[in-house]
Length: 390
Image (cartoon, rainbow, N blue to C red; front, side, top):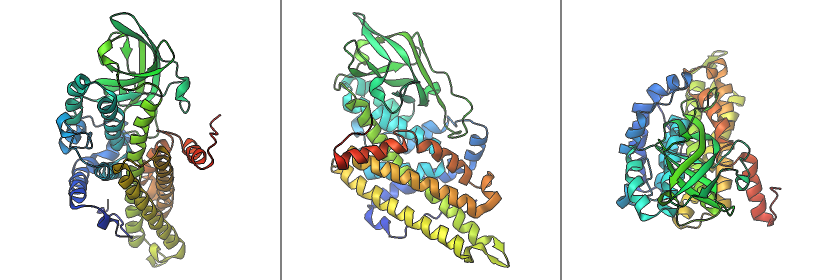
């Protein structure tokens, strides 16, 4: 394993504040200390290192932009971005855990929940004492969440929830689940469902070739009685879950850069060390072409993410802006993982190096929180004014 030296060809660091750099250093050191030594084994064994959850909480990686009064750090969105970059450099599964906890659980509770809900859940989610998950995707409905079948009815003193969700990060270990379901009028609403409620189960999804160090499962609701105070009072309709996805996509756009930089760093160091025909393979034109294209694409992604962060801080980052960055940066990272693997040859498929693990992970990242094609159509709709989803 080579020492991690991330590329900064356009001196993007100069655009960051001292606070951003301090936050990044603390997360980077933690990844080096707690993730890198164990992550290949966790991925090989298809095990999520659950003990890292509380460590992430102590680091302030959960809900960093949530106000301090609710357990967050009150940081800006660029801080959130650099945290996601460093975590995904460690592994997409680790970043996914933090991303779900932050953007898909804490964010909607903070933005759409009651004050009682904020006080009850956010501080424990921030420390990692509680694990959260988010239920939107269903067995029959992924890119078309408006057709969801999960529903709940008003039973007087409680709601009765029925349905199922799948591909849910953290679900088998979650203490709370933010669930999106239709009420009796067919309107999409958000509810908080707690582990232990009768009729609520979360079986694990087995046999994944991707995100093997992340735990994934289903959410099944069979006449689950949900207290009325667990309904989000401040949102109705798909704008609720879609705003959560925008927050998650924002973090992914930053995170994917970390995976790309880890692959590039590995490929560059290997090419300087590996000799063929009596000289380092870095001296050959085709290898230099790969490396030069990698650092170019990483630089473009860094600038895209930074500008998106500025706009997010100014509340100007539209869903289209975020979709463009998510789509571009994940595609970039996946291509860099593949090209890096080629530079390493057969060594690239072993767990002596992180490249194949990143490559497999990114095959999921390019699909979740909106597929690659859906993000392209979001941009298309933005520039033409015509939705092409159906």
